[in-house]
Length: 323
Image 1 (cartoon, helix red, strand yellow):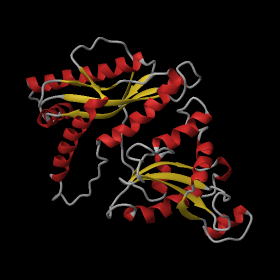
Image 2 (cartoon, rainbow, N blue to C red; image 1 turned 60 degrees about the vertical axis):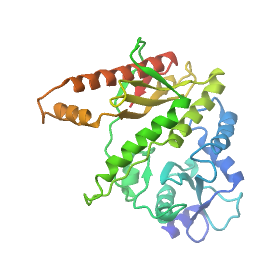
Image 3 (cartoon, rainbow, N blue to C red; image 1 turned 45 degrees about the vertical axis):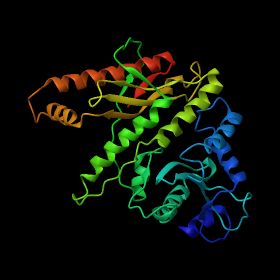
């Protein structure tokens, strides 16, 4: 691959290599990506957003690393940026990007293969797997050796309703809810230790939610002069509660040409009563025919928080809700 890439660049050189970008190169990368990640009012605002997000968890204090694929014949700040990608210390990989002028030349593939060598030991103890969002399609990642994770993203339209049975979740509520959620997740994961199978989860901790909410607040401040205060909704009694945490994502101003892409994303859905959830799952799958009051209550609570999400999307003029 190295000789083929060198030929395309028009000179003879060693194979491009992976390295951390310089601050000036980070600005260049932001300029290149600004046209394809349209979640800011304009390019100058987008350039302001990137350093702002570096000050909040999980990116702050070196939690996010910005990588670039470059050629050794050029010095820093003067080298072509063939491909770029961000990674987080919690072994999560952000979107991959390749400048249109360099696409179709295997640079993104080479960057992924080089990252695969670094990430298992980068900033942390040894990990057996790394999670990545399929931002450019699952086929690309499968071609470089990644395993596809089948997933569904149900969606519904934004609708007004008067869901009075839910309590709103605010920023100050999130830390305790995420702590409870994390405890449940760890307990569930520990029950699989003797199964012989590798299991992986991105822990839905407070830092994870704070990243998404910092981004939504930054964008809404600049689009509307105010920010969303409600971060989710909860329904039910303690011990059998259901809650969702969401984020508002604007890819375009509400009256803009891409307004139909504006979405309320449900980041996390939590069901406290796992026994009732398992029972409900058996009913849906047809492996059980016995219904009970708790299953009906769970359905009512799920419906209530999802209707609250639809109402929140409607209030903020978002097009739909995606789970």
